[in-house]
Image (cartoon, rainbow, N blue to C red; front, side, top):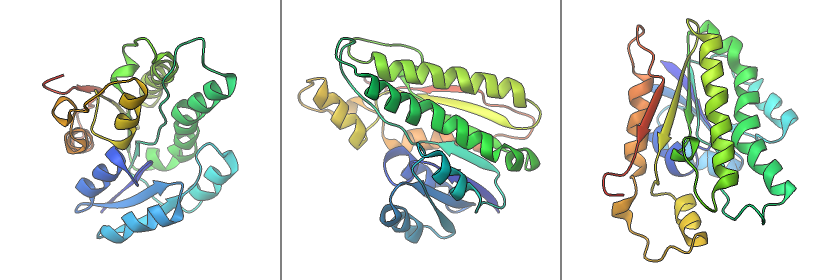
Length: 226
């Protein structure tokens, strides 16, 4: 049975990815809360816990030390913020880049030896914001552009050893999306104009199940009615 580590697996897209992979993978459930992680682990047939604040370098290294084998990692953890360019503080910028870019890069670097041994796979759940940016979303989009660039470089560096897939969903029906639309002043949240988390998770499963001769490099998935 293959083993996958999913960060941000206690909510939203990450949790749904864990659910969809559970029948065929050993799922390492990543999250910052022991209670939250344990709750997801208990729901799955073959799972274990990975509890760490990924912005904490030492905590991340300690958590990684418990992983013996790894076939794939799905980076689903992330943060979002809304505000115009004249309102962002340095602390907000640091937090955004730390969680959305530095943390996945550092975690992947720690796990690359095991991923190489398994001829494994790195899946990065990015965003439409990795390609475009609009008013109020500059800080978030900047982090997602940087995340895409990092994944593109990693793919080139590891080609033939580890596959790297970037998945760019549009607005998706998560708690984070509801919070973001509220911050943007959008009234009347319409779930028909956002993606279901299951649709994004299916894209992740598709990439992970690609045949050994194929590298699914970039996938975009947007709501049909947006």
